[in-house]
Structure formats: structure tokens, C-alpha cells
Length: 243
Ligand code: GLP
Image (cartoon, rainbow, N blue to C red; front, side):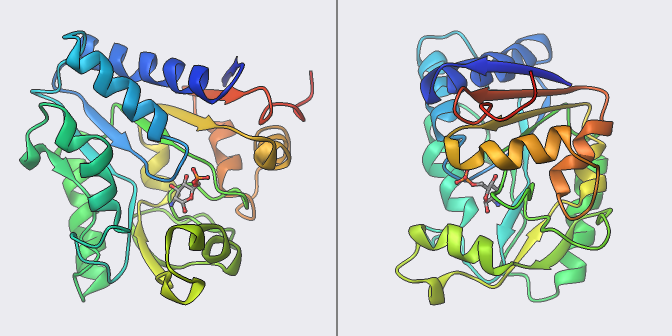
């Protein structure tokens, strides 16, 4: 596990975008695993800027997103499909047919999760998976649990996640109660993992996840066992890790 410290959100975003664009340059038809949330917005903005300058080309890139709220349609501005188009896909030359987000509107959860898991495998797996970190240690929407989920599945969101994500909705009641997410096993199969984290509010969970015991109660802690993980955090988020 390599940890890079950035002085602030902007520098974190720039470093993360550097790592992702290096992957695209080295393997133009790579599979990028992408994430949503407030953390990666700056990374996507930076990639768009470099794309506009001609420094990075998405023509052959394929993407798979980590997760999607269950029940939200693609045109709902809180869906992760909408988020990805707004922040990245509609701003670069990626082919829409090469982008993938779980379909939150598929009523048969098992069918959609199995389809998504098979799709990732058929693409040859993820070359680099971008991750944010939930306040309770969740990655994707893998919430604290008694065991690590292996594959893409449907989860019940915890109260703390609903509380944390309600800022994006009109009220907490509008936050969907379930989501489809890649499993911990799916995420761990990615060849490389890039986790980005910023802000003092995440300092405790960063220390717990990456320097504490490996437990499904802190889903991100499993990343300690992956052999190619890079964490890029700002100084505030890394302020509680042992030095
Ligand atoms: C959301 C997403 C995660 C994200 C996390 C943190 O619920 N499902 O993929 O990493 O919460 O979000 P933020 O970056 O806004 O703190």
C-alpha cells in the first residue's frame, strides 16, 4: 500500500488524475473502474481539462462504475448514471456504449447483479479501480457487515450513509434505501486500486481502515490485503495515521 499526501483537495485531485491518465496512456483500451460521491469530482474535472488540451484520449477507454441507487431512473439527477455523464462522460470523447453503470431500474435485483458481474468479467476485469471512502468505511456501497460480500449485490443502505448522502436530495426521505454495488470480491479483483480521500471528517476512518484490524465492519480495511493499492489523501484526511 502506497500513501501519497497532497496538501489540499486540488492537489489530491491532480495526483489522482495523473495516475488515471497514466493508465489510459499506457493502455488506451483499458477498463477504468469509476466512483461517484463528492470526492472524485475534482479528479474528473482535471481529466476533462487534460482531455481538452489533447493530453489524454478516451476514444478506446471502457468504464464500469461501482454502484447505483436502486429505483432511480437515469434521468434522475441523483442517479449515479446522471452524475457520471455530467461530470465526465459528456465532457470527453468516451463512447457512450463503452460506459457501464448498474441499472437501478431493473426490478429483478439478482438478475441485474449477475449481469453486471458477468459484464465486468467479459471485459477482462478492471485495470484500475477508483474508490472514495464512506465515513463508516464503506467502499462502493459495501456497508459494514458481518462478512465481506463477494460479488455485485443489492444492499440496504445504513442510516449513517442515508444521513451522509441526504445533502444531495430534497430530504432524507428521498434517499433511496437500497443500491446495487460491486462486491468486495469484485473490487479486490481489480489489478490496481486508487483510493482518494479528503477532509478532516475522514481522518478517523482512514486510520482505522488502513492501520487497524481487517474486518468486514470496516469494509475498506480489506484493501490492506490487495497488492497494488495507492491512497491519495489530503493532509487533513491523513492527519491521524501513524507516522
Ligand atoms: C457514497 C458512494 C461511495 C463514495 C462515498 C463517499 O455513498 N457510494 O462510492 O465513495 O459515499 O462519498 P463522498 O466522496 O461524497 O464523501
